[in-house]
Image (cartoon, rainbow, N blue to C red; front, side):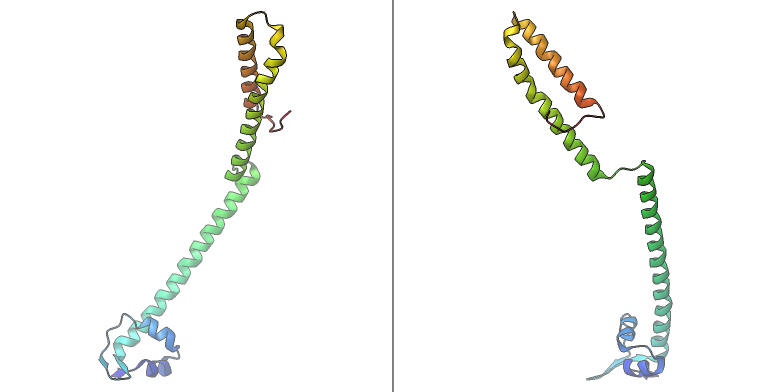
Amino acid sequence: MKVTITELEKLTGITFKTLKKRLEDTPVSRTTNKEVYFDSKVALQAIFNNESKETLKLDQERAKLAHIQTKKLELEYQKMQGTLVDANEIIEEFGKRMLAMKAKFLKIPVRLGALFNAFSSASELENEAENLIYEALEEAAEPACKSSIA
């Protein structure tokens, strides 16, 4: 028996839009100027088989959502424990350390300039410069390194 989507809508109680979506891959039996006809047996099979596929998709989507929520909670738990750190926090801390290191290195010429007259030879000045560089590097390597320019 040949039926239209409108007739299938009356028979099944499923909306026209849903039927059209479920029948999009179903072969058309016959077409007139205004109507598209489907074989009723093939059409009903497509409608109700598709319904079970949609339910399966919904179950799969719920499972995916539950999985994602679980992962999110695991990440939050790891962050609370201190075993996970936000990348933005790392970037911010790295920036602070770089600023602190820059400030320490920029102070070296000023400190050497103040001590310049105290040195009797170039090698003493060179040794003091080396000491100040190593001091700045050691301070920058400490975990408590601050970004203040002091």
